[in-house]
Amino acid sequence: MMTKKLNKLSMLVVVVLFTSTNLLTQAQDDKKFTLSGSADAYFRANFADEQNQAPGTSFADDAGFALGMANLIASYEGEKVGFVADLVFGPRGEDAVFLSPFGSSNIVNQLNVFWNVSETTTLTFGNFNTFLGYEVISPTGNFNYSTSYMFSYGPFSHAGLKADFALSEDVGLMLGVFNPTDLTDGNLTGEYNYGAQLAYKDVFFNAIYGKLGDNLGNVAADETFQVDLTTGFDISDDFYLGLNSTYNDTDGAGFYGLALYPQLATSDEFTIGLRGEYFAVNEFGVGAIGLDSDGDGSVFAATLTGSLQKGALSIKPELRLDSTSEDTFIGDADLGAIDESSLASFVLGAVYAF
Image (cartoon, rainbow, N blue to C red):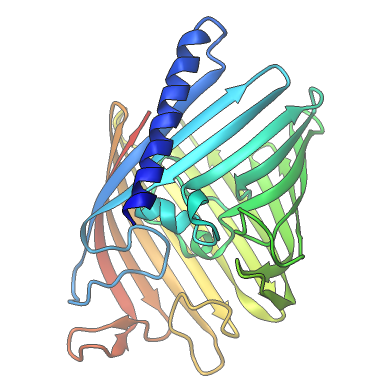
């Protein structure tokens, strides 16, 4: 265990030293080589239970004071070619790369190279975060600190080759072939997934098709298909509205959902926003919530988040209520018994971006 920690620390030192050297030597080259990233931590507590449980979504699910992740992103963009090396450390980072089969690469969130073939065509080869959905792995890319059900049970990352085409000023198309979802280090299954994204201005239609697999080479016999719509608009200078809708099917089982993200800036430093999400599971599609005897169930989750910006630091107090159609949570009265259909919680997140 100590050897693994030392190896990770050594890699971090090498990345920082290598990046610092290049930043100095290329300072007059339009700063094409960059180092960016974030660090985050949080506090989470429930209002009326003693079980230290959390909603069935990704990240921010530990009780009390807890860690998110440290994120370091080194990138170089030349006239035609470049790369992205995105490293993650900490609980959130480990959860993000959960299907990474090799311990040496458990800190790699994204690692890819790209080639601008022409002004309208770019090829990207390697591992990159998913193009589906409204939310992302990095807390700097989300308004709410906790994440949605649709994000948590959709893809996180893909490894493969994708081609982005700028068809016009307003229209873009992406086509790609990937390992099965979240198998980012290698592929022992022999199966591949196919993805596409059609973008019109700020509206994105996404789809992925293939089979699910695991890092031991096992593959699901059934084919899986997911379609997704993501968009967001500035209604006024101070009011923004985002929307995400998704549908997933694996031989009749799966999930679907819809979420709205209204956000109001009350000052230059403070914005308040709501995520209202409806998420439904059919035929035991995922184990996110309690299900009835037919494997069906649903949840409505309302998350009210404030975001106070102090320079590069974002402080995010958050109130969240998850209400499910079936009993999902352990109540106070009978320890160990799943006998509650709602959970009210509070999260205070702090995110520093550089």
